[in-house]
Length: 338
Image (tube, rainbow, N blue to C red; front, side):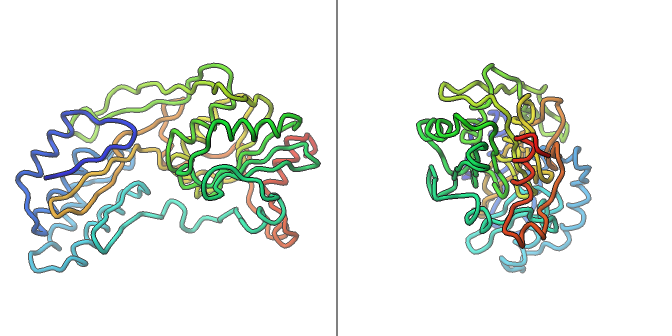
C-alpha cells in the first residue's frame, strides 16, 4: 500500500485517489517501478512547463535502460538521473542504501560565506534556539543588531525573539543573515518575518494541482503575512543572502523583499519555491518532489532564486583581514556611511 506524507498543506482528494489507483496495479519489478515513478511525477510535478522539460522525451531516453535483471544500484541511478533532469533541489529519491538529491542550484557558485570569521569577529557567544542555529549580537559600537539564522528547521520561541529584539532597542538598524540556510519550516521563517511589519501584508501566492495535465493548476491563492504580537522592528533591515539560501529561506527572502524598510544584499538565492510532497513507490522507495508552486507578490516564480537589491561578493582581501564584506557593507548602508 502506498503511504503519503504531506508537509503543512493537504493536497486534494483527487490527487490521493489517483495515486492509490496507480499503486494498486504495480509490483516490485524494475519495469513497474519505473512506470510508477514516471507517472507519479508526470501527473503531479509542478514545473514541467516552467522549466520546459519534455518528460515524454525523458521516458523515451531511460525506458530502454530498464530490464528485469538489473540490480538495485543500477535501477536507482536511472531514477536519480531522471529526477536530476528537473533541476530541483526538492526532488529526492530514497532507497534503503541510496539517496539522491540535486545540488546544481548552488554547485559552482561562490560561497560568499565564512562561518569561522563570523564566529571569531561578529559573535560573542549569544545564541537562542536549538543547536546554536540562531545567534545574535550588536555590532558597530552597538549601533547595528545582527542575527544569524542558519536553518529554519530549528525553531525559536516567541519569548526568545522578544529577548533578542529587546537587546536591539537602541540600535539604528538590523542585519538578518540567512546565508547557507537550506530551508526547513515555513512556520519558523514566518515567525521571524512577522516581526518586521505592523499591518497584514500580501507577500505572495500559491497554486495547487487541479488535474493530471502539466498545466492544470488553480488560480493563484494569496498568502498574507500577519504582524507578530511580540516586539516589532520597523527600523531599517538588511537581509544577507547567498546561493545556499533555499526553500523556506528563499521564501523568507521573498516575503521580506516586499516590506518597505527591508533591503537584500549579497547573491541571488538558491530558489526552491515548489511546495514539497513525499510519496512511495511500490518497492518502498520514497520520492519527494515539488507539487505546488509558491509565487512572489507579482505572481512570478522564484524557483531559480531571487536577485538581491545590492549584489556583492565576499572579498578575499577582506577575508585575509578576518572581515566579512557583506556584513561590513550592510553596516555602512544602515549607518549611512557608504
